[in-house]
Amino acid sequence: MTATAYIVKDPLHLTLQPGSVLPDNLSWKIIEGYIVTNYWNEEGETIVLGVWGQGDWVTTAYSALKPIEIQCISTVVVEQFEPTAEDINQLLLQQIKNLEEIFQLNRIRAADQRLITLLTWIGRRFGQVSTRGYRFSLKDMHLTHRTLADICGLTRVTVTKALNRYKVDGTLQQVSKDDLLIPAWVRSAQKTAYDN
Image 1: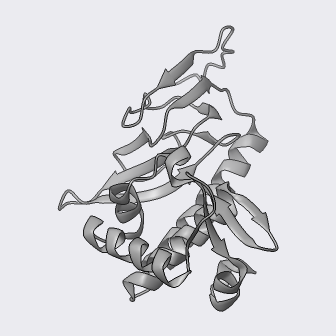
Image 2: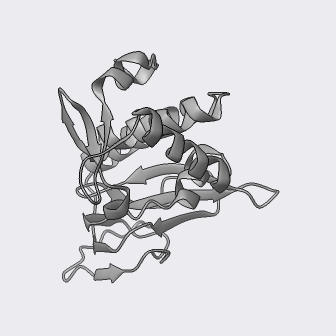
């Protein structure tokens, strides 16, 4: 068997809507928007393996789990991408980190703590970090209560109730029409290994 190398002369550019699935076995550079990588277990439950944003790249090519689905959670602009060996190494390291962080937060027993840990992770990874806390927009990321529930293994109802409680008790603050802030006192109260 002979391996054939090829270069993509005109990379494919796609603009996809929330819920769209990217084609398998190609590599995609995210120009704009947010994506999740999913796997389904034998019971048909969705298991989120990673959350990806602008500047990241995604593929199903290096996963031992099958089937993997690359799903848009917001409007996404992607470009077909031919990774170098270094790109692949960096992707695998980021996949390991994503998996470890999602696995760790899914092991938190208390639903309220699990969800606020997820929101803190999202704020740190995709939001604006300041001395005041983590500022991010669920609306811009198109993170519905259902999507948050899927990522952290809770029900949509539990997520909705917890978000409402967070807003009442100040754990989550509305700082503009679309932006939320997790105050610094919340993140300093959290003791998670990946905050180091």
